[in-house]
Image 1 (tube, helix red, strand yellow):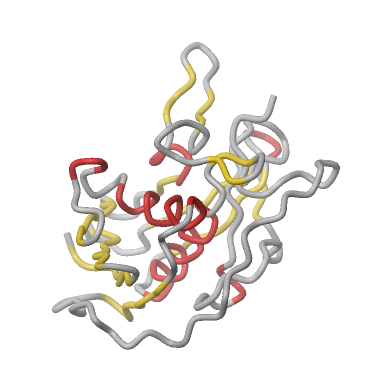
Image 2 (cartoon, rainbow, N blue to C red):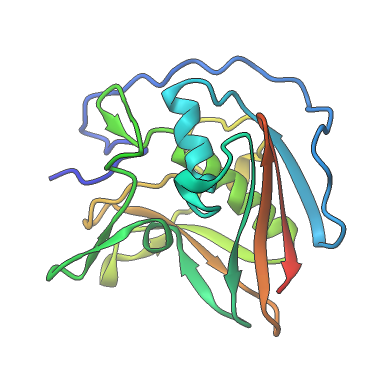
Amino acid sequence: MLLVACTAPANAQPVTAPKIAPIATPTPAIPTPASYLGQYKIYEFDTSSDFGFNQKWFFQTKSGGANANPNDFSGRLCFRARETKWAIREWGNAVQGRGAWIAFEYAPWRKVGDVWGLGVCLSASRLREAAELGGMKAVEVVGIGAQERIAPVPTHPPVFGVEQKYWTNIWSCNCSIQRDLRITNSYDFPICLAWWMKGDQIVVWVSRN
């Protein structure tokens, strides 16, 4: 049974995502971080559609959720020294009695076509790129348990504003073709992946906790 899809397996019926018009390099209308490790990155995307809502909600759910101002919010995902975290576990819920985790397939995530949460891969790709630019390690992992392996090459369609090597699939199915984003703090001190979204712009960076 399909629990979550951001992309579909090879034998699935294709799902057509909404077309994304090219967006020019954003002129920052959002304050840049005062302190950061490595480099920060500013992204811009249309949040008016269900597809865009899922991209924004990926960050907003870790920023106060429904209690946050959707047009101006900030949040962070923090790590102990050398700690590793997984996107599906951080954004999802454990399935009682099954030892599995599911994410993105229930409200307030929105269904686009036949796919719940379509769009989260784009925001996961942004998070991955900003993590790497800040000195962290982030990889796309395929499978679970003994079947787990690192995805050798990006298979996600282009993500505007993100370098190709960071394009990431998120697909939670508790099966051999599950895809997840694994992020590791490569520093010997606590850090946070932080973001601030204002309107249709978001700045993402890594900072000491």
